[in-house]
Image (cartoon, rainbow, N blue to C red):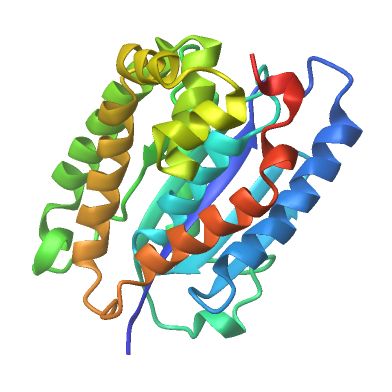
Length: 257
């Protein structure tokens, strides 16, 4: 029986330009531990911290890898060294829980690597790119994998342009609103008025950015015939609960502009 999975390979921009190698490596080690906590009892996930500034993740469900990648991008610590993600999804024969990600060879890993390498070569780099295997199947999205890939990447490019236009405070408010879900909670945490937070949300196009994320997740999730219990909803709940419990660690005072 085929198993539905998704993959990302993450790299960090400009990681060799400053002396942050040790700090970044420790940060990624902790992030790998956090992913394990986020996915526990929800989705099966295999995580590998490679070559200092690379993280590879394979997890059950078509939408899981992109969901994890977007959350990572919103809590990311190094503002001048942003992560970027090559993504893929599809079916595998093996039981994911038995896979050794360090040695696993599969077309999905190759596609995620191709997407990551594409981003690596771009000057005006976006943070997310999908590469979907060109399968021979004639059912479902596999019959239109190239077209589907184009639509996904176009949406991600447009979303990236909107994120790039955000100021520092607008980006921070967007991230906190994403985690906390209410303007008044963001207001309390940042010690700003609700009107100020509302202004930053509107000017920073927070709702457009987040709704694009939700729509992509919804589409990927809808393709996953085996996901009968809406595990992506539970995954997002788990991540948010974890982040909220450690909110000052993810968004410390020095980030409160």
